[in-house]
Amino acid sequence: MSTTHKLRLGPLPDTQTVKLTFTCSASLKADLDRYAALHGQTYSETVDAVTLIPHMLEAFMSGDRGFWSAHKLPVAKAHTKDT
Image 1 (cartoon, helix red, strand yellow):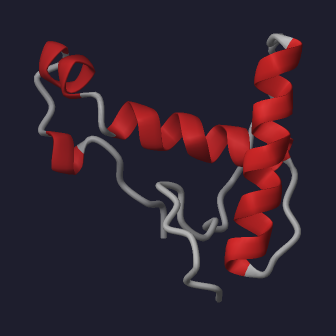
Image 2 (cartoon, rainbow, N blue to C red):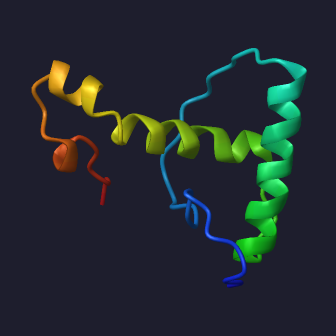
């Protein structure tokens, strides 16, 4: 694993998935592709933007204190990993 970059999104975990389709701007897609390329270089694994998007959303939501406080859930317990 390369340590030249510190990315907010770490190595990807194995998860059960559900298919979801969304539309984004061309500039956001380009940024996602660049992030995926940097993530691949950082963690020595090839990954595309489509694979990263759910993990990015999960990281964003797990850190959104406003969302969790509105639901009266502690931030630390908001997301649990299935084992």
